[in-house]
Image 1 (cartoon, rainbow over the protein chains, first blue to last red):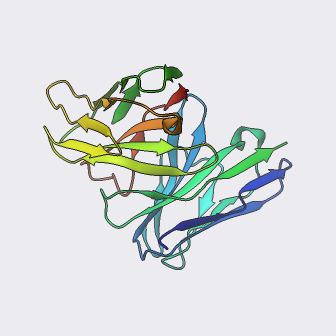
Image 2 (image 1 turned 60 degrees about the vertical axis):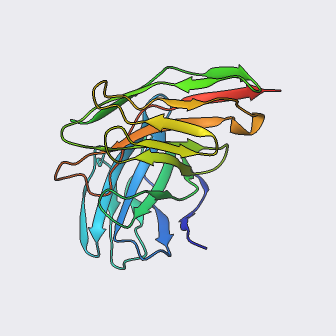
Length: 112
Length: 115
């Protein structure tokens, strides 16, 4: 089954404690990206990757890092989380630049 | 830059009522337009799309027509069901050079359908 898998689905952490949200896709997609969803703001892109070892900032990259060492994986790293990063995070992948995005089920992060 | 504006929600309807969710956009060039749906506790799923002017996307009884002259992509359904209760997002994929795998989303419209 074609899917994008994120882990963890739910996480409560404290300010400053580094965490990583993993994302993996099994569709051999070149493009992967991370979004955060906040009430009234829709989804905003954090980072994207066009292929292995090629990443770039989206609209709200501050406080986040990413890496793309393998085509299927695109982890999101919060080096020092802060309460304003409390949000619902989605990983997505697509075959082409303007193709349909396939989303993971989301990771709800709370930073205390 | 690109932007998408959706009608304010939430929208509450009775079963079998007609649904319209308005969506307008601002973009340069010729964007592709999408409607995504998010059911409770799930990720977003593509509902329908249109890639050029006057195209009509349709799926599961929902329809939307790409209107370049009014920069709109309104979502409609003739008879909603309780199972249509979800959050609906209008989105565009720009034709600009930096639009790699990126969608620009509206703020989302919560739809609740009562029996």
